[in-house]
Image (tube, rainbow, N blue to C red; front, side):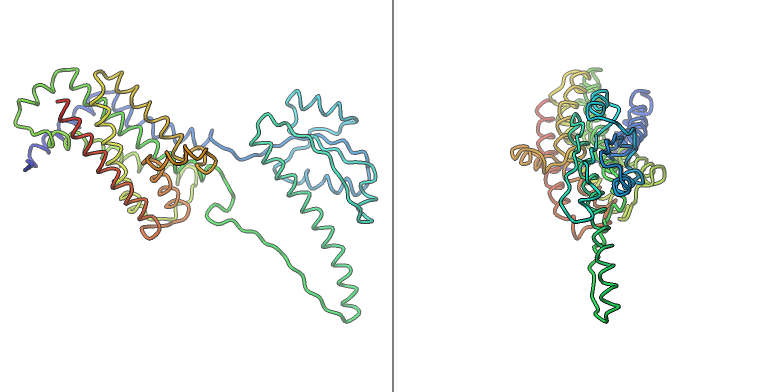
Length: 382
């Protein structure tokens, strides 16, 4: 079927005029990208800081105070109180004043000096299981660090003694480094995923509501008797929303980089290319929703019915590897999953086509497939 570029151009121009004339659609274009970027940047933060704790020090020696100094000096912990009994600390946990309680036993320093095992009691508030797990890992790391320092100090004294005797020795030092997210900030992980979320929300909802709105207004009947072919109408209808999606990519990327300081190590052109491939899927889904909705309310509700599960099964918020196997398998038919992986890789790792071509190919195949089904369904409905 031969398409008329002039008809498509007129349709795109008319669609842009409609979008710009409608204050609700203008608001959907601009407000969600800025608002959700700020909300995710400030509110969605899983970093565990300001951990308050209480201590019951039965030993009260220089070594027990030295051990506690590890916690006091850490930027993650805040000493709330010294307590005189376990019951007092448990009441603090029940009130929510502290996250955990640490009890140092009698003979802590004495046993440490002679190399005997020492058991510390730590009681954590497990109401928030993920926070409790992270706090436990912090405590383990600090305790291990303290033990290593004492061990190295002891070994160093012995080595110095051996060196004085003319005997040389070597040491092993472990220096961990984190690539791509050196500070392990959760915002660096979450905020790039907002691009996928917002593009999906805006393109799906705007496309579905715009077509249904014309059907409600009765202009669809006028279009049927016009020289405009169905494919020209679909292209003219979808192109403006694709352009709006690109504008939103610019806005969110700028906020992420210049406002929140998220590292961007990849190619922005490559990100736009991947965005273009992903937008084919979201526009097609919006077109399909318009074919099964009779009113704008139905279109909005149907968009959210697709949008919410798509987010939950995309890895934007919850890691896919922690889901049950059946839901992990379902994520493979969710286009957002692949685009989220692409965006995060481009932002944090700086990877390009060499490593992401499989995601791009899957997105392209899914986009073309969904678009063909949607166009077929649209033809049946009209």
